[in-house]
Length: 252
Image 1: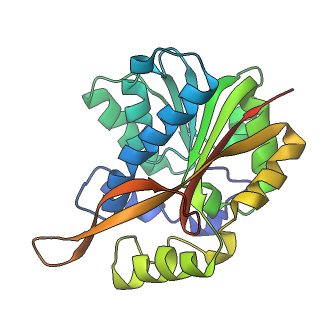
Image 2: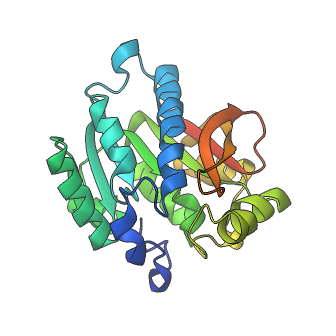
């Protein structure tokens, strides 16, 4: 995540870094969410790139912004992409590096913010830039789109997943998920930073990024053996009022 757009005094992931790869821990729902994130990424890539259907990400250069412990980066790398993952939380990057090494994956993980990454890699451009579950933590989305645009090749793809700003998202993605169902760590989200697809579309346009591929994500709730609510899976939906993905390309 970008230190110029994220409130550094409130990094919600610093104390949770050790739990990234615990499938039954505080990131359990994110592990379940990763399956449909990959389906969405494949769907978007197939729309904009002429890739082999079995290897849609093969040889594509991908940047995973706010990569955390590497849950999504590893899955993308296994699909053939050349992956760079950046995150401001050192503990998360350390865990991501160890897990990738133990998994035999070559992923370029860097503990940095987006501004500093651009400064140190001024000529670097990517085929795909992904910011999954990042936008809802930013203080300055305009700066984010400006910097993301600098990192995209012409006709490069930007893929975002985030949370809509609605009464239903406040109820389900914030209050119930954190306080009642306890599917997410308490306090991880701020409702004021949730954002509608229409707002993101308008904010991205000045930077030549045209977002138009939108889909909702619906959780399938089940009960664990301890009789606690858990997310068993996610499925695509046309309902965008809570979680959604939005993507598009940069056109110079």
